[in-house]
Every structure is written in structure tokens, then in C-alpha cells.
Image (cartoon, rainbow, N blue to C red; front, side):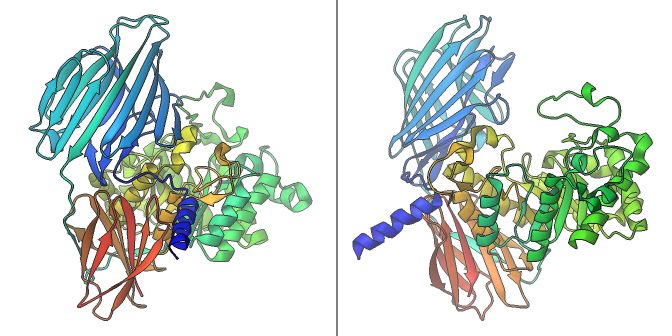
Length: 623
């Protein structure tokens, strides 16, 4: 029996795509090289490292999310490696977990240029945990001690260290290359010991069922088809194993009407429908047949619809930002409406909403905020005149940070009747204050909020191994839980439920080997997607900062769900406010070792005591 249990655990780890890392010693290494801390018994002993090139108190470039061009990330057992370049200096960083709180860090800096600048390894300490820290910096050792944290760095050679203290943080620069000279290099090996207070105290989770909020129809997904080989198998797996409640597909406009003076409906009816256009329509039909609403979003316009010469537009930072020709508005609106009409007549599809993808940036159609408001009025009115019920997405912005893009439309009552929902993409800037602004915009218009593209790192496809990392999975589910609690969205649409940014691994996806299998991210999403259908957001509070939570209830059916992300050491949650008639709850746990592992817990007088394993996603469902 014991051997069978061992086999079960091994199989579960394999299915999770788990890395079998001991929870007692796990270094959080970002794909761009920054370390965010070392976990000891699940508790994050936090700091942030970075690689820097420049001048102290002057011009300095530091490694960070989406700052470098295609960093390379790779894991080999307990070792994580990142290779990246800043200002002609290539850094090779290797981070190896050795034991509880013990980490080896090796950094090699190789200069391909000569500049009057230096290369550094930087350690940043946030004031929250290190405001009163004692810092002792010697040539071979650096120690940092605060009330609840201790970090000891031992170097294999003498180094120069510079400390810069600020109000919000303290930065410690360790010199790697004193001056950049072509073909010069240096290596520094560091032994890091991290320790601190491990908090196992209970967390109190309180539901406020007297004030239910917005409808959560369920978790959704993007289905923009790009890979004819990889997409079908991933889509099939996701649709067969997840409850997907909302969909978003591409409008392949440049293939629908590539020539200006043609009738695309007539061409389609006469056998001239482009194969990619047909595949996108069939994808939408499949989603509609399951019963979900479908958003139609456009990336690439046809050449004839672009203002000026398309060849004059250049990619800058991955953005091309085509402007539509204002003199061809009527033709543009007719072309797009013809597609929506054809989808309805030929495939029985009524798209719930329409958007240009990330038009605040121009991926790939660019609008100013005022033009976006005008488009909503004009194209919304055009569709209404053709008796097509598709409404407009307000925003569908590239990030939460670009909130001001929707202000002209918010201030123009003539747009309101055509707006079906407010939308943003969750790649960047999702602090609490910004999320509340988006929720407020939806409330102002009395329409739902939709996260049109959900995830955390838009550049992750460049270092796809990170998709299989538990840290990436934890950051993603933390974000979704916070969004659910703060924004109360109608749906979060994962980018994507195809082979692009896939929740699955193996079978050649991003060069991966072995059978197609779910990752920890998949199990997190499956757990969240198991929320009762058409549930209302239930206000919920947590008295522990490192436990995020969100709650839902389908009150008419008496079905409730409480989702919790434990970002620290194992502890217990005391959940209060459950319905008095609930006597038992199912508890699901996902982490590096568990894949929605199920247990049951008794409920007494609306209260349940639930064990929260370290750095895990835990969901409680009323039975």
C-alpha cells in the first residue's frame, strides 16, 4: 500500500509538470535573471537582485521584466541559468539550490565593448522588511540583518561594495567589472544563506454573503489560431478538461477582404473563402456550440485600409501601429460588418463584442483615445443600422496602466449605448489602485469588466521554459485571485488556450519533449475554472498579507467557492461566513506536488478550519 501511494505521488508530480523542488529551499529566479528571494519552509526571504551596467548615481541600465532582448532561461534540476546582455556585456548567471536556505550563485560578466562604465551585481532591499536593517559590507562578505530577515553573502574573492540608501529601498552594488573593456570578463561566485521568521500563524478568511457583487460567468480563453500543428491538440485538451465560459477569437481582416473593390461575402459564397478565415469561423462556431459568448478582435488590417504607404510603417519594440485611412471609413465599416453578417448567416454566430486588439499601442491598429471613442460611436451605430447586435469593447487595452485611453469614451454619453463591456489586458501594472479604476469604469457604465488577455509576462514566449516553473504559476494565479477580488470581472480570458503561451507541455511545444501533459499552471486554471457557473462575487477579507483570496456564490443553487493563494509557510485558514446549511466542503490543493488533490473538511456553524500547504493554491467548494 505504501509503494502504491509513492507511485500516486510520483504520477501526480508528472502530470503537474512538477519540478520536485523541496519547498524548504527554492530560489525565485525570474527569466530575465532577477532573484526575488529565497523560500525557507515556504516563507519568502525577500530581496531583489539585478544585473547592472552604467555609472553609480548616474546613467545605469538594470535587468528587469521586458527590458532585455531575448534573455535565455533554462533549468537543469536544482540549477537555474539565465544568459542575458546589457550594453554589450553578456551575463551568465547560475543559481543552484543546495539546502534549506542555502544557495550558490555564479555570475560571469563578459564585455564586448569598451566604455567608461562598470558592471555590477545589485541587491535591492525594500523598506517594508529592511527599513531598520543592519548592513555590514566587507570585501569578502555582506550581511544584512533586520527584525525578521537575515541574508549572508560570501564571495570567493575580494569585491568592492557600494551602498545607496533611499526612502523606499536600499541598493547594494557589488562590482563585477570596474571598467568595460572589449574581450574582458570576470566571474564571481557567491554563497548565500537566507533565514528569517517563519510565520505559521492562522489566517482568518471572512465572507460577506450579505453583499454579493458582480456576476462571474466563469474562466475564459483566447483562441487566436497561429500554429496549425500545435493548436488543435492543445485546444482539444483544454476544451475537454476545463470549463471554459467565454471565448475570444481573431478577425483575420486582411485575409477576409485583401482587395479594396471586391465583395467578400460574394467571394466566400462562391468558394473563395480563405482557409485561415474559415478556420477562425469554425473555431468561433465550436465555442458557440459549447454555449459561450465570443468576442471578435482584429489584429491586422488589409493594405487598402491603411493610411499612407504600409511600407512606411516600421516595427518599434514589437509594435507597428497602423493607422486606418479616415477617407475610407464607410468601406472599412462595411467590410468588417460584412464579416459579422456572414458569420451569422453562414455559421449561426452572433459575436458578443468587437475590438481592435490593443489599439492604445497599435497592435496592430492604432487609435488615439479620442479616435477610439469616435470609433465606438460610428461603428457601433453602423452595426445597429444593419441590425447586428454585436457591441463594442471599451478599451481592450494592452495593459492596466493605460487607463486614460478610455477616458474620452467614458466622458461621452453617445458612446454608452454601443459599449458591451470594459476590457484591459493584465500583462502589466495591476496594482490595487489601478485595478480599482478599471472596476470603477465598468460600474460607471453599468456594464461588465472583462480581462481580454490574462497572464503576467507578454515576453514569456521568448523564454518559454518559464511556463513550466512553479514561480511563474504562482505569480499568475495570484494575479487572477486579486483581479477576481478587486475587479469582480465577468471573465478572465487566458492568453491562450492554444499552443501559444500554452498551459500544456510536451509533444514538441516550444521544443519540449515527452507526452503532452498539463503544467502546474493548467491545474491552477482548472481549479479556478471549477468555480460554480454564473456565481456572484462575494466580498471576502484576509487578515494575512501573504494569503490572497476571492470568493463566489451561486446563491440560488447554494454553491460556493473560496479561492486562496498561500504565498508563505504552511498554516491554517479559519473560514467564516459560510452558509449555515453547509456541513462539509471539498478542498482542492495545487502546488509543485499536488494537482487539485482533493480532501474534505467539516463545517460547523458556518466556519471551517482548512490546512493551507506552503506556496499553494487552495480552493474550498461547498458540497
